[in-house]
Image (tube, rainbow, N blue to C red; front, side):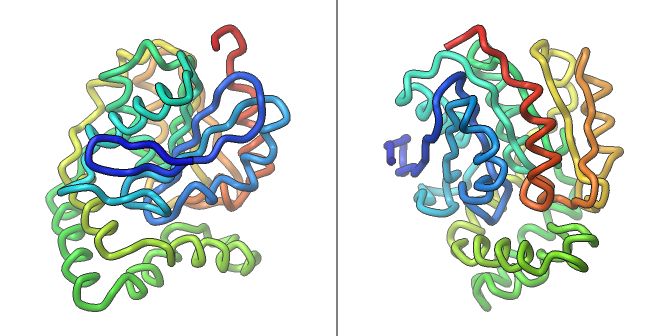
Length: 264
């Protein structure tokens, strides 16, 4: 399905019936990232999986894909689907988007799952590295970037024991375009710091990370969990930054404990 959102067209998929759960994928992939975990939820829940702007079958739009634009995209999506409140799950950039969505539309949030993400803004070094990746992609395409990132995105256990998952991740990442990479990297580089937002989050919140995640390791997850009142923490074993794809069984089991059933 597709909807218009400001300067872009967004693609999304809906499966299952019940309370709505919205799953936001990480940087470089698309909504099919969620397929294994999603399939463990659709017997109980209505699962909505968009391609974020600049990813998959969604268009890039104009300029940087800022967190504000992503948050507005998300609001238009749930409006189109007539969802009053939902559980929102975000991995990596998905978490950055949910911090902004919370600041704007907290009344639409029944619960949050913040996975393999961090609340801090980019450092100057991180911003510079994002700009370098854009320059490199414009010269050489996205393939070198993809191959460089794969060992950072999946954990050591996956790299060693699950070549099928590595291949699936690589296939998902190959849908990423140079224009998409540029817009999304620029948007992440200028995202605001969200640490001060954390104490305001007053819905049920689960924070997760992979035990082998080197990009957003356990200390990032613990900071979020400790600053959000009543938040819980789950560490997914044998998984890196793409934990929901690497270990969908354990991730799905944790996720099924979160969604509420009192709102439509």
